[in-house]
Length: 214
Ligand code: ADP
Ligand code: AMP
Image (cartoon, rainbow, N blue to C red; front, side):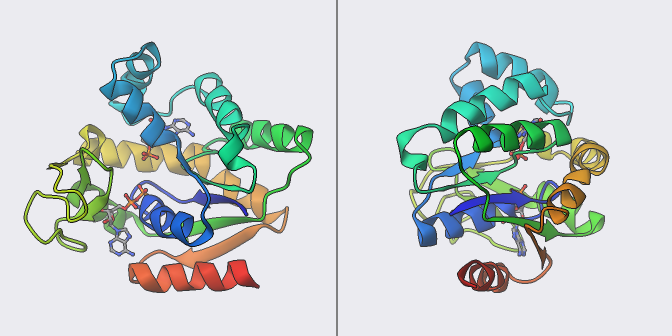
């Protein structure tokens, strides 16, 4: 199963990704997570990516595309993968298509999670992430059992630097300008499943898994 999760920042891509990859036993490839991991380890890539991420801008295509190309060529992606947060520009989508064609592979589905701006802002500013295992919570909508502590691994929860309200607004603008055109791009290819991202987490997952079964 080769899947893409599309949707604005805060739509719930990572949340759905974590359940989908368990169900289908495929790797979860989040370009945002890859950059955050590089920032944590203070690599050259992390330093370059951070400049853009802190401003709410996209990291340049040439940095992102090669990472994804290498990642999907790894052994654990042989039976499929889930891309979360990639592609984010038409150029990235075309680069992915070219790579998949070369590998004689095809995408199965592009899940587009739709959520309006006001809820997106609420979700992003209330998001908390585990420093150790990366699990995602929301202070109001999906709180951990103990404030500030991860239910899964007891790690410390933190707020992402780019989840400040002004940066979130910028990221949503960037999404509208550069990423939203991908919905049309994949709709023309007959790959898109549109889901209402304002529904509860398990309802959204049910809709996605039903569509993937059919
Ligand atoms: P994305 O990966 O698209 O940026 P996340 O999956 O990190 O989004 O979700 C953003 C925030 O919204 C998180 O705090 C998450 O717990 C919360 N969230 C995700 N899906 C839902 C939902 N269906 N209903 C309410 N809150 C949600
Ligand atoms: P995310 O975790 O998906 O919300 O991504 C966080 C940030 O990482 C984005 O705001 C971008 O700055 C950067 N990023 C992640 N994926 C990409 C991508 N495919 N193209 C460009 N920038 C990206």
